[in-house]
Length: 274
Image 1 (cartoon, rainbow, N blue to C red):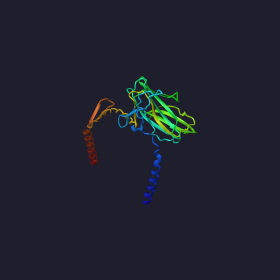
Image 2 (image 1 turned 120 degrees about the vertical axis):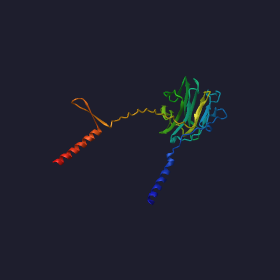
Image 3 (image 1 turned 180 degrees about the horizontal axis):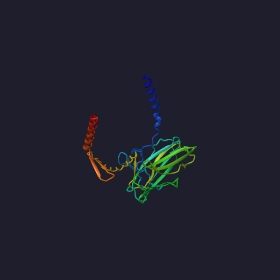
Image 4 (image 1 turned 90 degrees about the horizontal axis):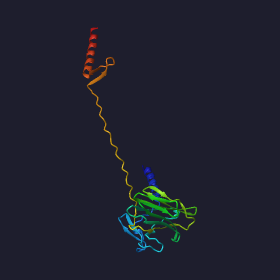
């Protein structure tokens, strides 16, 4: 028994030793306080509820022709480990009007924490749809027709000394569209920089979620159950077809038992006489 306890103890220690390695650096959760506005020069943020932040542009067009929105420098991910950052954004037909847009970009920084490169994604309302485009991948276009909370996913990797950036958009756990792995060449990038709503012209702003809402469960329709017909068998009569006359002969159980009893007495009587 003591040997078993010792083995179990060693096993548990080994398992706990590996726990830190199973919890790889989690993606950043963007809360209300994580978005910087610099006193309104970079838009505004307003809490809708504990999970939703409404983000708006600065309200004036600056020298670059963009309505600056809030940014965050919260991510501490390193390029050598691979970077994956998600932003959960609500796309709703009633939130934006035709022609309104917002731009979201993720940058990478160098060793001195200065800008190295970035990947910009633009989303524009076109009639009743949303058109998502990426300038560095002109072949990429995603048309969003259904309302919902979508995942804007940015990934960055370092391969053979080159920096690669990629963008994907997801609805729940389904990838709707993805760019190619964009070759940025040999950059000085080493870590995540800012996540920035670099332009927001939507008057109602953009709703950004800290955590992705749960996927609605798909209800399985209940199939109607057919009633089972009860089959009853008469237990008092046995019906038999006479092949010669085609007449039915009905014998009762009582008559059959009586006949067998009479035959039994007849056999006994014959034996006595013999």
